Amino acid sequence: MGKPAIIVHGGAGDWSDDEDAPKSESLKEAALTGWRILQAGGSALDAVEKATNILEDFPLFDAGIGSFLNEVGEIEMDALIVDGSKPDFGAVAGVKHVQYPISLARKVMTETPHCFFVGSGADSLAQQFGFPFQPNMFFVTPAEWARFQQKQTASPTGTVGAVALDMHGNLASATSTGGTHDKKPGRVGDSPIFGAGGYALNGFGAASATGVGENIMRVLLSKYAVDSLTHGKTAPESVQHAIAHINQFFDDSQAGIILVDAQGNIGAAHSTSKIALGWVDEHGQAHAKMTV
Ligand code: ASP
Image (cartoon, rainbow, N blue to C red; front, side, top):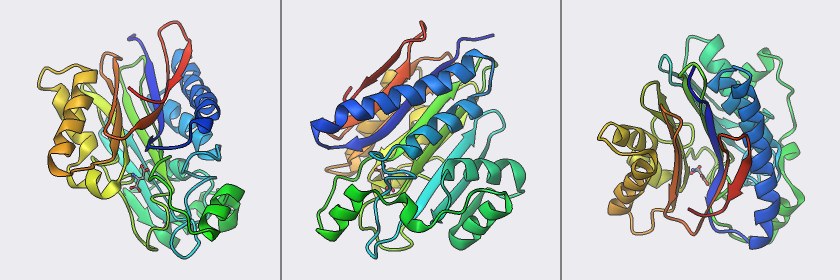
């Protein structure tokens, strides 16, 4: 039995320092929820899904409740879950009515022969699985409605993600987002793209990315970070290497990434001013911080 590990994120970007304390509480709660599952011998997949559900419900993150509105005032959410033991993944994009997109992504992976569903087909699949069907406005917070009405911009931040290693050596990654603010309807970023928004492979590592999706998906950032482990790099070195890689191609890459390796070592790196991080140490103590 190996030592379990989990690290979660709530996006990379820039936001008011006033949000740091409430975000920290939510990140710690999410990390602890996943940690308890892992400590009880549960799976990395359960840990990352349940941790992500907490972050999807938290209104200061751009996922589930609190998602950014698109250009026409609608919420369209994307999610990806990766099972490093197979490997396998499930993804959804452009869902408008599913309260927990990451849980729908998991159903896609485990209950269908397919990997990826989009739009109304994904929403109706959720209904078939008995997910509560929420009106689109259910996900819109008063603050986001005000931002949209006042035509204010916002940093592309607040996507959530979790990566974990369980006692059985299985690695998993989860990523969930409302995408970028005021995006065109139908625009999909990196988050639900296997290898870009998330990646996991047993014996190597699991990663989840956040930031400007158009940059991240062009370099398959999560796969790049996990692959970097195979070149003798530690977890912190691998994520630094991945950020250096994306920075080569984009002047302002606006990206962040978290990673756990097959020994339970964690790492995080970002090219933004902040990244919202939560994790649990080997004594069961939860921590959060807003930069590396
Ligand atoms: N990566 C997400 C997207 O491009 C946004 C974010 O992580 O803040 O949709």
